[in-house]
Image (cartoon, rainbow, N blue to C red; front, side, top):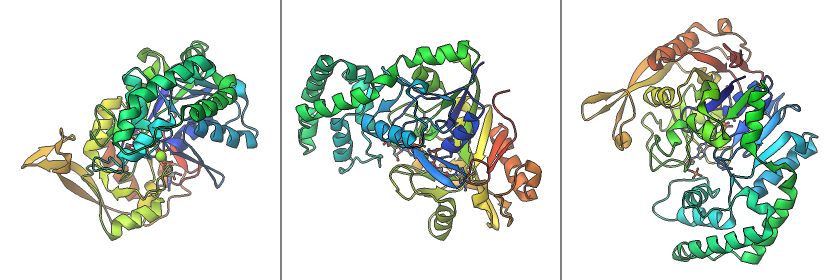
Length: 424
Ligand code: GDP
Ligand code: IMO
Ligand code: MG
């Protein structure tokens, strides 16, 4: 059975957690393949809210296999906290979890460097979870990996080498070098805890695919935060697009059959960087409050704006989307008029896609559509939606040339209209 990818189609926080949790009920295995605890994925089940940063959303379904792939950067302390949370609910059985031995470890020095850099003038508005510095060490080939936790001598030697290289950076930023003995001791304890679930994740995913299991791949962050195609340098440090599901899970592209891109019915962004359809003032405040737009990881208020079609077009292209999961349509209830940023204008030219570098200079060009007043929380089929909501969805589908295959009408798992399930 082929694999299905769920990916963020905007600047993150689109509602991937909810979609993955829902589809997990129909899957055999769920795989997180990239990013780290910069992610905050929310699930609401029968009114109860849970946020995972590292554990795949899907873990709440007791029979699903949960994999953390080699493309991730893992802070073991955060992972253990999440495991404890699952344990309290009787949902942690080591046999159904696998953490890739190849995933990179977020170390105290990474957290420190991220934090210190964010105090300076080059701040990106990161989540300060050590993500950038960890991926930097990965590509510089001096990172520490999860599997190293199981070999104390090797871990110690790599830790010493790593700190030796990072020392000048930390000193230049005004920081204090973490104490090697203390870091070693705490990480060895983390290793003891995690040992039962560490292994070859790529092999586990491949076996599942070969056995005909339904494999769901959970993306983190969003297309516009992608290191290559996003709003560089205001991006995260990993590949966030669907192609990275293969690399991060350790399987080939021939296994992917469907890619669902999750997008809000409007746009949000946390952190710095251009945002052409951003709203200011009362309307932004209204969307933020109605949508509960505060970061699931950092609690920061999210910047809010109208739906950005050029960005969504890019997501369709860069991920090869076969469907759009349009979440939070309910949040738009009550607007007299809904604006849709259908293209950009730059120096008198119309643009269908985000340009290189100049996104901060473009002017958003809007199409205005009529709104609706009816609350949508109880809608369970397209037919239940008000006419103007249906029209809004149709206009989006036409503009980006991709069908809307799922609609979110509230935060709860049940508050979803699935037009087409990804596993046939
Ligand atoms: P993720 O990072 O993509 O998983 O998204 P987050 O969890 O960071 O943020 C999405 C927020 O929107 C969470 O608070 C969800 O509970 C909430 N949410 C998801 N889908 C819907 C929806 O259709 N309607 C409403 N009102 N809230 C939603
Ligand atoms: P989920 O998976 C929204 C943003 C940060 C910052 C930039 C770089 O929940 O959608 P980083 O800490 O990664 O170095 O920060 O990326 N960012 C996210 N924004 N949702 C996320 O994850 C994000 N992960 C990182 O706010 O602008
Ligand atoms: Mg999030």
